[in-house]
Image (cartoon, rainbow, N blue to C red; front, side, top):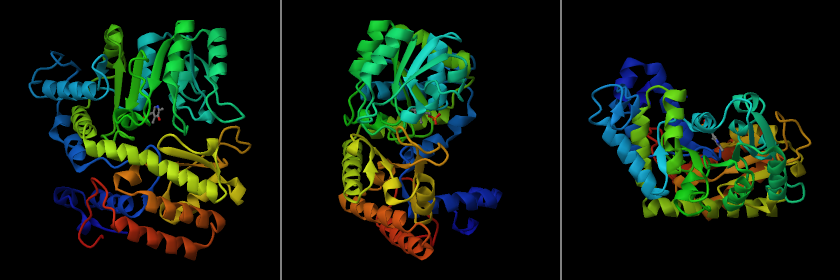
Length: 428
Ligand SMILES: *Cc1c(COP(=O)(O)O)cnc(C)c1O
């Protein structure tokens, strides 16, 4: 592929040409392909500069004003700024912890704050679009706690709130999760609040995928309803990799202690600065327009796929992602995802609800619009995308066709420079 002579990082290229070349290659890959993995995005150059800064050199176990090491003159200000910006964006009534290393550690902190091993917890099952950390069997959250999963209705593939209520009444969970990774519809946080009240559970909303949409008012907010809200910072929110936890003030001490010293040592201060920058960006009109377009694009693409004979789960989408069963096209999810990758369309194969096929060879694809929308793509590009996906699914082993589509996609990508992508001389 490329080499260190196209690196835009001269110090790195001099010290470590191999890594510099690999980073240059990844820059190019992210530039010239359509990135449709629903959890991915493009962090801005500003976010990357903060997240890659000298702030990472500093140890600061503890919280602003209460640290275990000296020299926190700058770090305390960074962390306070991140917190106050997040409160301004989401809710001033919630305490904020920005120290979790990522989304999964943020969720573990919620368990550590409210549960003892063996306690009953409830979450959406993985096969229905839930996350591993909501009690799946291979996760410690399913091994160390008594996990009860709820699912989606067989008739319409929407979360079955009657079943959630019945299961909650039967099992009396200590902790009730509402949050999804592969669910194309809005989550009814108010209904979960009611159910949690009826059984005395702590209600935790995990908005890892949708926090950018929530910040922009493009998805109903769990704030004011949930006892705790967790999120990643790098999905629709478009920040650096990280996690954050919001909680009602009465839980602040339990959450803070669970994160440090319960689970972690020193916070990743450079990531905290990146989160502060992302929160500032998310308060702009440009971000609101992006979030709105993410949903418009997803709805439009879903419609076009339906028109082309794909089985779109729930018939469409309310958010940033589409779950589509490709088997009506005579192909399974995995070979479709692999052929699409060769054509420059990068997404993941995914089980669909009640999938008759195996998890490693499922029926569906998960398609997300956040990253391509961050590049400024809109309706016209969604039309082209639907046509390309259809062509590839019909002729997945026609390598000449895949190469031709990859070339067309490169041309289109050249017209939509992505935030934070730095190409070397001659790369585009
Ligand atoms: C992505 C995700 C997580 C985990 O985040 P990581 O940063 O990958 O650990 C947790 N919950 C949900 C709902 C997610 O989508």
